[in-house]
Length: 106
Image (cartoon, rainbow, N blue to C red; front, side, top):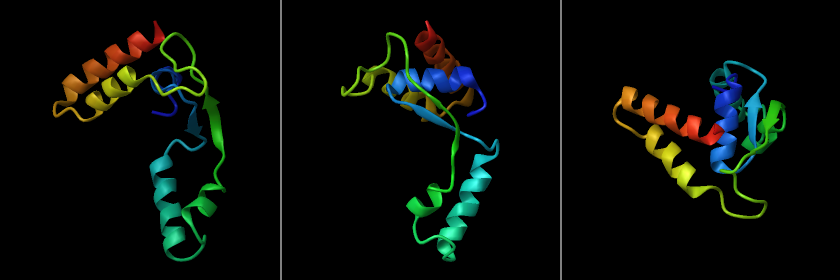
């Protein structure tokens, strides 16, 4: 999803916080490798391992749905995303997430 600029912008807008995107398309694999590295002592902590990674981009929130500096995130949008991500029906979640993304960009 991090390669999808529209999604990451909508996510940043919805949560009212910057979203860092991975420089690696298969970030899950890299994350697993870093966790293994911490487990075997390559890095002393997750923080030390994370310091090795640099984001490809940082997507800043924009638009009316974003939270202002120092305020709480746009709770309504966060709840909509959370609801979409925990839905039991994949097709239902996809439709609802699409609507949230559309609303965030409007």
